Length: 142
Image (cartoon, rainbow, N blue to C red):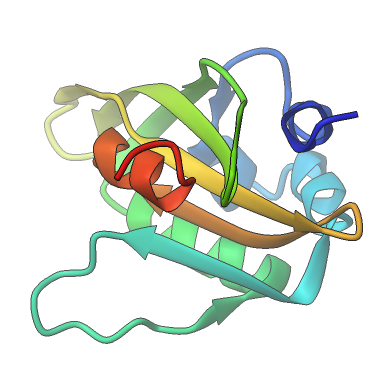
């Protein structure tokens, strides 16, 4: 089984509202936490100029990172489009349809994530607003 197949098995086959998942106490969060080690590296890219990496780790870091990111949203529907093995990790392009809390503004964008496994568990999970940065991080492009 490839790493991409392993990561695919960790994710729902349908779009997931991350506001419900991370702010609503969904049981799916417990399932996700079960595949993360306490030292799993979590990062959201890019950082703002001058910002330092907050050093997020494990399930708590994953939850904190997403709770911070999702603060302005009433909904944030994420759908993973594919799982692609790369030399440095599994590249996961996604589509997002979101709605802000204030004003109900509809937002759509196409981010990506890169997941690295070690011994069948998630060792690194980085989220990128820019798909090209994610492809580079996964070793698919230079």
